[in-house]
Length: 283
Ligand SMILES: Cc1cc2nc3c(=O)[nH]c(=O)nc-3n(C[C@H](O)[C@H](O)[C@H](O)COP(=O)(O)OP(=O)(O)OC[C@H]3O[C@@H](n4cnc5c(N)ncnc54)[C@H](O)[C@@H]3O)c2cc1C
Image (tube, rainbow, N blue to C red; front, side, top):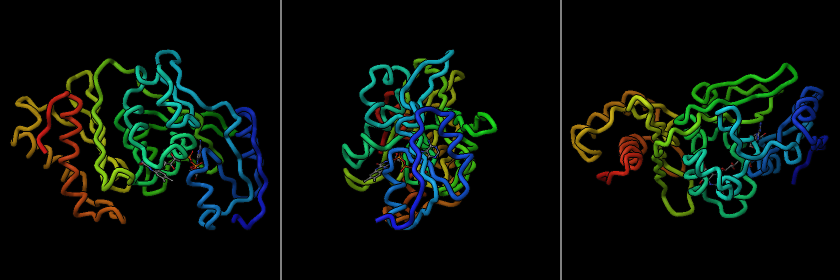
């Protein structure tokens, strides 16, 4: 049960959200789908005087705007999976949405923006946004600013978002037809990931790979493509070296300790590359 009293606002547009946040005299929180926030408030981990609900603010949907794919912050996993344009405009987010566990409740209520703002190291959306080179649009009374995904995730459960800002949308580069690769290593069918890797081939042939769930924040690697195939031992050794250089403080939680994550991270990265290149990776 949530024991403290709070003011509840459900504005019908972004201006209303921003106004409610800037008028708040005490701690204010933004409510997306509530899959994390409601349990946090129920257990007293988050205490707020003001709750600003985004559900009526019109921030959902995936559109193409001036050559940029824009995902509204309250776009749910279910929306991503049901929208036929999403497959064409953002195939990587479709892969991520298809693998999120928790059943229909999480797919129908959990939002892309909520996952980004919660910044749980074990979540999948942050690393996917980093791999895509996404830009997060943060709105406040002072206007709108964009933050690159690489700079947005500043630590475990920490982001560059200020408390008076709402994440309104996420801008994604227009897909160039290259097939993204995505791999999620998990303990059981229903579990959160132990490690994820998202691979987005760049126009110059280099591979942009973001590792998720292995450190406090997503880790971005740039890999040369495997000329002799993703199973080539020399290329695998090269991936291990690149990963070891960035994975200095692996994440530990109940699913796996840091040492395990350190060992599997290069394997998952190589598999994502193999997936992107539609090659069969060696496990
Ligand atoms: C049983 C279960 C299984 C799960 N499995 C997976 C999994 O396999 N993979 C995975 O990646 N994730 C998984 N998740 C996590 C899930 O992806 C997140 O719970 C969900 O995306 C969070 O979105 P939300 O809209 O519900 O966030 P909320 O709970 O509404 O909010 C989360 C936090 O972000 C803030 N916030 C939300 N939206 C905004 C915004 N637009 N602007 C500013 N701040 C905002 C809130 O104030 C709060 O601090 C699972 C969760 C559960 C409960």
